[in-house]
Image 1: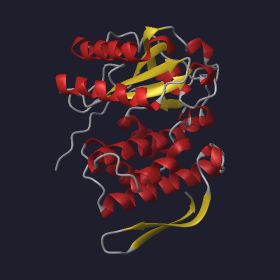
Image 2: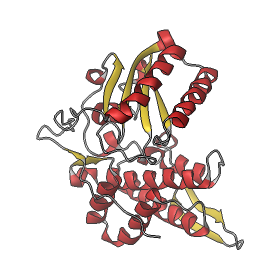
Image 3: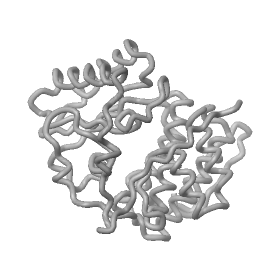
Image 4: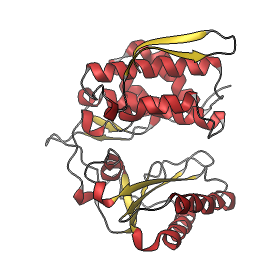
Length: 292
């Protein structure tokens, strides 16, 4: 099957100050009118259920920067809150938002991220708010977030890659194709984070992630291009896909520790193991060595 890859250049460059700064011109475009309606409905639902705890809602991702693709892109919202939001409320909110997808079928889903305002300076998610989001309701909080440098400061995906790998190989929370797309995005964005100090770029766009990564690791061109294709046209958790995921994530995690981009400790989401086995349909195993 032929996969059409949109070759867009969408990134944030390291400034002369040594920090990443959001390009206000790039992020000043209006949100698509077609997508704005389900966004506003989603915000209204959030306001109804969270009420007093709600500080602000941020929009991030492809819809925020007008590069969305109908039936593929999510509406990615970040909820900044002041007091704990129970799991019951979160589940109820997600169920209500799932109805939005039914009313607007071009929306893949409404995806939520939660950040406590007290943690806004320290959480790794602060990167997404600072560099790739816009406030669509409530108080702006970007000013509370310290300036961000290349490397560890922006290594959001790299820091959770081990946990993401285990989730991909184990949990059946999502369908195989959904998990395939999710994991391939993680791999591509981790690759871009790995080379951010050398490239001077912060990138979320998948094609840009691929192009920048292979500039520094050309030997991984084939594997990363396969990840790019699978992010767009997933095929589920086949033996080939599992082997690709284990191979690429093992390299990315080992390399990030070698370069001191992340620490090899539990807080960084990594621990040293001597062998990790991935069962296959033929009862054979793929064994990866080193940091996982």
